[in-house]
Length: 156
Image (cartoon, rainbow, N blue to C red; front, side, top):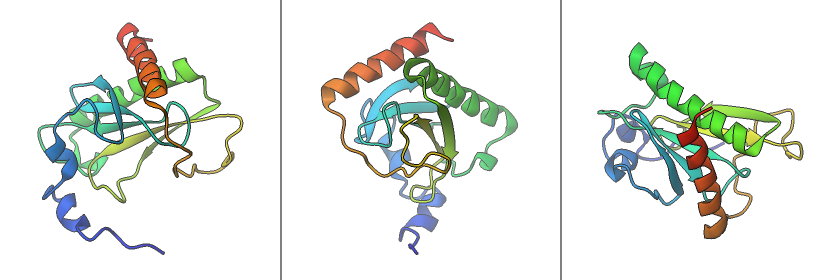
């Protein structure tokens, strides 16, 4: 059994939220940006579950923790951007299954894990373990990021 991060309650309110404080960097330390949207930025992850693992981070004019904190129009816009990224990952990597997960249990800033699942998935038939399976080389990360950027520019 775990514990909530010590600053969870304050960050949930937007106080000291590192994600808000970071702005919109091209590289957030966890991954490289593949899309800059009106309501989100999407980052291809350096470490991760599987090739093509992306995290889409809400980028509105205010801190948001939950999807339910958004008005209908803003939720539609955010979700449409997430779906656009998920479609690009699907088109480029052809996973067997795609998971979209809105968690925020460790980082209370709205973000969605776009998790491709493949035939050799060790967690097949159940929820994915997002633990690290190794770090991508910078060459591989940049190559994959460019494939996804190209797909996002060209559309469905």
